[in-house]
Length: 118
Image (tube, rainbow, N blue to C red; front, side, top):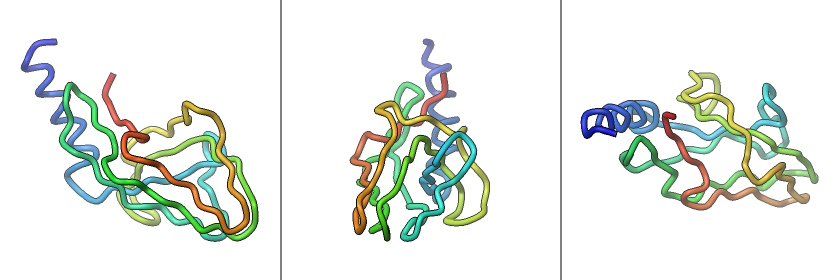
């Protein structure tokens, strides 16, 4: 990639995730946002994009949840903690579906949520 192309990709990724608050939302399938007791979208932070890609740099924690549940199979980034504008396509988790125990949490360590333009 040329330096100009890389710079443009970095600018586009940064516009999606670094120009405003960005919230991570979890999904039970390709279209349905999670609605479990204890669930709320979580504010996530991203460093500046490099080579058209960035990843969260702070652990995101969901829960604690009331009752066991799942599965969580997908995620997306939104502009608000409720409502708002979806900032990314709904993405499938690479490692498969996630579940939680009663009183449990789901955590996403730094680097777990990657945003890029392919």
